[in-house]
Length: 140
Image 1: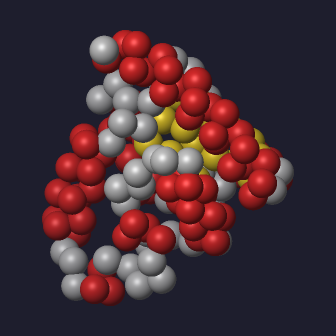
Image 2 (image 1 turned 60 degrees about the horizontal axis):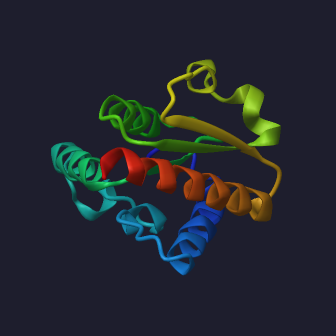
């Protein structure tokens, strides 16, 4: 959250669309203007909270158009937990996105290149529906 927050408006639209579709977004703090460190949270408190939330989550949705070490950590952590991870990247920024992220070939990872917010939201909802079905079958 200390990196480039250029995608914040899109992330807010994503969160609203997910909630409207009946999904529960468990990280509303990422939608805020004021950062956790500005609120007085220590790095350790942020780590403890975020790892707990990732362990509770069914799916990680990450916007990766702009570099973030924290988001990269979250992606790796959730992948290692075996959780589905969906990363969204503006098509125009795809070549500037980490080659490591673009190269992930694990079955529980999907990278969506989107052209505009409507395309990104539509694509995300389609992937979530396919993941939800297969994820529930694997767990149930």
